[in-house]
Image 1 (cartoon, one colour):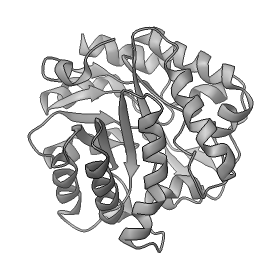
Image 2 (tube, helix red, strand yellow):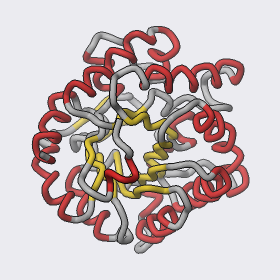
Image 3 (tube, helix red, strand yellow):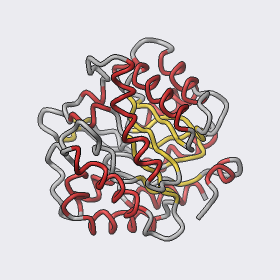
Image 4 (tube, one colour):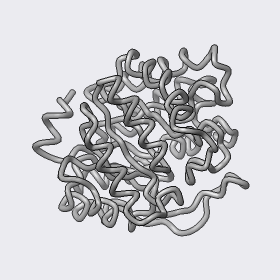
Length: 284
């Protein structure tokens, strides 16, 4: 397994793709509010197999199936810690990969589309409490790094940054660059600077956005290792729980993202092992 912090100073590293998308393609039902967490709970061998497919395709970092697993969500709290720890152990099984424990936004636990707006009606302190216990469990479970991802608003980013500062473990932080929560000019850049200022944060950037959003967002980021793993350009309809629109080949953007400072590159929703293999080839 690579030393992630050291490697990021030398070359780009390949991240995996859309876990839920691959699980669905493998025949699993991810249509419920639990999404891939349903498979984590009911068919862990499928999670194991999906991680292995991404690793075989060239992913050096695999993200755990914990995005929609959190206290106070759809899953009863007495099951949450077990599933969080299981997600890390399953991601550990492919040889020589960095395990990044997924920490999704509060909206992901609600499964109502608010993960793309950040409009939860929660205060800063409430957001901190919403994230705290999960962060501690995942850090204790043995993940190599925390992947705080798809954060949709400056307020939630501030809450997570404060919790990470207290926790003091390696982390990668990425914003949902297309979120309406960052519609105020300059808010995205300020959030990226705040995330970069937290001790232990190895890289900052964007995920789950259209590929053409990546470069403008990275241009606003501070001078450190950056992360970019967009979706394929389709749009999620939270009411019908379906994707709409055309797709874009992710690998085409990789050279420009790397030139802009991206040191972790991969795919988010709708990306498959074939996309990660193409990204790995582009990085090489």
